[in-house]
Image (cartoon, rainbow, N blue to C red; front, side):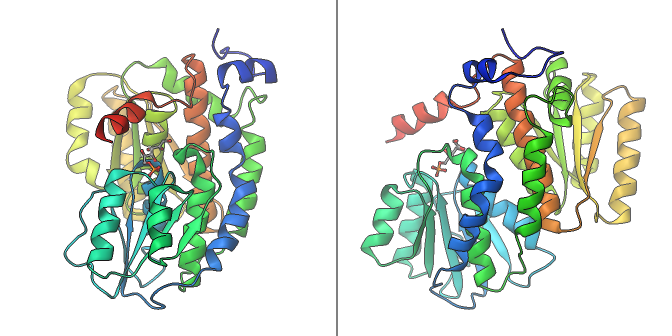
Length: 348
Ligand code: F6R
């Protein structure tokens, strides 16, 4: 039996459907974020004023880099880039700070990029729960910020992202986590599994109802990384294919195949209250067109907290909850990611 369409989840049913407690990990994000941020702020950067920051990682670790990049793009003068690949860009030099994020500390691409950074003499630091990355940093006296072990990397977002934000705050980035953490705590209550009519459970039901892959659309730059987080969480927790698009770019290409496919699909648009009027109008027109063409009855979610990080985390929390509830509706355990484990083993 999977999550009933009319009833909320009781504790017994939940522990049977989600034996490794992915939902609990999602709901504990506000508890771990505060300490993670503090730890991050206490670090000693190898360069006090980097000209640019390059964040290297993969999957559930890399997404923290994208969240930071998009949060700070319009608020901090230091450019942040994210690299999901074993090679470093040629522009990375001794005025660049390279931050390596790998929850396990054993991801091949991240370790290869780390090796290149140390060989090229680029100032470097890492966040990891252990593994080879932590060992190699230890051997070279490179700062490594430890995060608690025992989580799935994607579930450790509270540890990884808030540690990273603390590190960036120590370098001068305008980040204050208090409002975001209290908003996350409110949402953990609002989206609790015993609330049968929460936005999170209702949205999961909506995604479950339509067989075509849902489109998760963000806005560049405000919610672009959040939409990517939703896609990853739907892939890994709910084992669901999801399309990822970004306004305004998707109105210049994807809109064509969405209309042409003739398939009815869920479209979720993630917006920020401060998105510019041009984009708000364009999104409104696009959603109108999708309704007229019967592609979808889109859902538009506008984060509205007054603090930008709180707005970002509002949308992340909703997506994380939706992905777990969708897994439960499908009768799937949200935690295992067997193909990722199998591929890593084949590559080892
Ligand atoms: C698994 C997950 C993956 C990993 C990725 C990289 O929960 O989220 O996307 O994050 O395979 O591994 P790490 O994060 O250990 O470097």
